Length: 241
Image (spheres, rainbow, N blue to C red):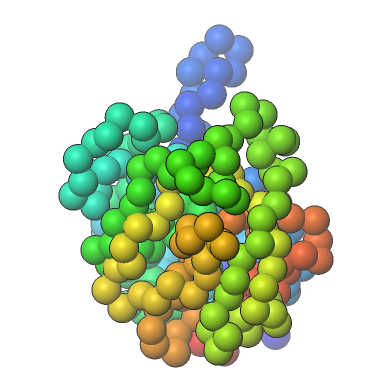
């Protein structure tokens, strides 16, 4: 029996290699590890051209939209408040096109951090461009170092009966928090299924029976087996789709 193929949307960055600026596509190895632990076959996906998307989606059994830079405000028709970090509207459109084709083909999706925001704006939803430290008890101003950011934890209250609750087998959980932007209004056909106690939206999912779930935190960066259930649920849905 072949392993279900799980596409992992790679993040484009420019890095310096031997004093040469090289544009690369990359994804944290932790995504790969979690997919393998769930019994899936991970495949990294670069930004694809429109004529390439259909060809790859028909070969995928599941998709992970990963974390990354902020979404450009123009992508969701908002005025730029000047707080977005390293946004790239072209990258946004690549991921939205891939996501839309994937959902249209009924391929299961797990959208993480930026990915959850991409899912939301692809359906006409909006974002808060800066929400840390502004009356958010569980989202204070972010530390300067990633290790300190990832060490923070806050609770999330999950709607019972949601796909998220089924995947994690709980209605409350502790998560990390690396984001400074968050979902404001949910897009069409999406339901908010997780919130922090300070009101911040932490999870969304589609209203239908398809496994399309977005979480604002980084489950791959929590120590295993924490939140492995999200990857298990994705691969399980991919195996039966």
